[in-house]
Image 1 (tube, chains in turn brown, cyan):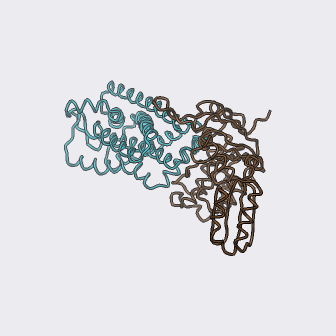
Image 2 (tube, chains in turn brown, yellow):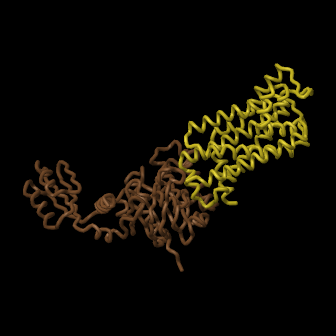
Image 3 (cartoon, one colour):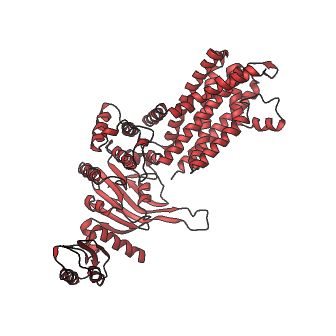
Length: 318
Length: 251
């Protein structure tokens, strides 16, 4: 039987509390999910939701308090070495060999994964080009900017062909062009059959990249599914965008009567996210349109950002 | 084997391309040998245990012990630096066990220690006229290997347990002062006050220096040295256990 890339059952991680009067912090609280091979899986949640702890358990950095987690069928607690042979990890911290050159960073990483010879040098050259690091090859990483260091760190993940890739907030410090090209590389790796697991708070990133999304909050599952399935969880959530030649003075007052989730007004447009009946949404658009010269109107269903805010808000109030 | 080679290659690249490491690992102890030792040797008449020995010859063991102590401190500092940089946690996800990680570090440490020993002994002979005692070389090698490993494991415990850079630097500075000066590294213990002698006798630096002194110039009581060697071995094993435990507890 072929195991899923990742299987998590009733996973719990409690930090502290063993010898103290205060109870421990439940960073992960009875979490269960599985990840199919070859998919791009997004683990989403607000700060402190337990994403990084879950990732640290899956990458053998932290032992779970209870429950089970396995990667390609290998239990992370009892067979950590087998897990490590099959994974590559980009952790949240800026982790690079500061005292080595960019090229040596890539080669050292490959050596740790058992690769040798001319092949890895050729591969390093290609990845240096892919990540726009050609002018920095011989420089020590300690002399590079934070964003470039992060680039080196992420580039290492492409030096090896392990079946599972974990990326914790991988795009931190990357410029939009590089981010886009890394996302393209990730899609290509997934198409080759590698499983990509990423955590992020940048929801557009997950929306664009992930086949499968798990939203957690306070260590517990809040929602799970692909983007369309998640959108169904938040019916009647709309994003309205009205562009004027000049925004009417009373636009904000009109919008506030509809109790929006979010409003953003600039000199030419009004962006509103709201949860309401479709007829009321049209009514709002009509009201706004009657106050000025409208150039463009857009009405969209919920974005991942709306879903995320809605679900984590529900979780907080529960 | 792959993991150990990878760790050693990494350490070699870092150390060989960094002038600060080269200074602290290789040049600093030689400075003591070629400046401090020559100065004392020229200015003070020196006898130990009723035997006239040149201070250069006497202090050679001290320099070697200082080198293994210093190299271990530097490697453990690199441990601390790795953790500060985040690369330490990334490395713990590489396909190797935590014990292999520790072993790779210590093997590199030992290699540097052996290299430093060869340089120091040859320079002492060539420049300061300290006679080469070839019969003592196996013991000299063993004492440097075990000594460098022992100090590395000892320091690694603190590098892994202490979270703050300033706290770690304070601890290593205190260790440097206390361990090196409250020992037989710079002077023979016999003329010293009883309390000082008692403290120095319980100091692993004294155990290592005494064995090294016997290996380099044949000075010391073999039965006492056997006891000191056994004590240092026990110290190394205890430090190894504590370091492995500290590494396993890293989350």
